[in-house]
Image 1 (tube, rainbow, N blue to C red):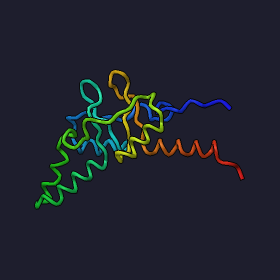
Image 2: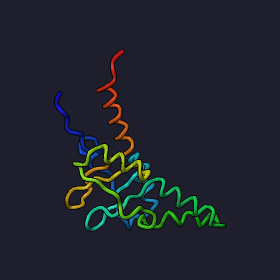
Image 3: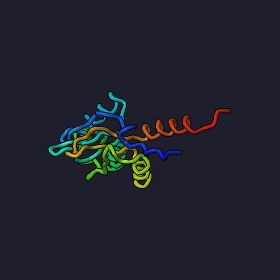
Length: 148
């Protein structure tokens, strides 16, 4: 029996993910997430990847705002804050050659819903999400489960 090479993130990542710039607003991030049906946006700037903003980051901000602001009309102003104010930075990232097991362990250890994938120049080339991990699980089930 030959030993198989472990599959890598590059085999299962979502290529060319939707990205956002750090100066764009939280409102713009929400619009992108809604329109493109994504929950994680790699944040890019000069030099490539500088952070990640997720729907959870934005929900946490809006929850804090709701409890801190007495005037609900002012709450909408927080949507004009820049993404850089809520993004996770510095980002944890992986290369496309990273083994899936290693990437999934990072996601579990840090409770991340995604990992941006970068090339040698720190340019975002993909994203590996919980959804991609679930697709990989189905692949393994189909490959190794006995047919009854």
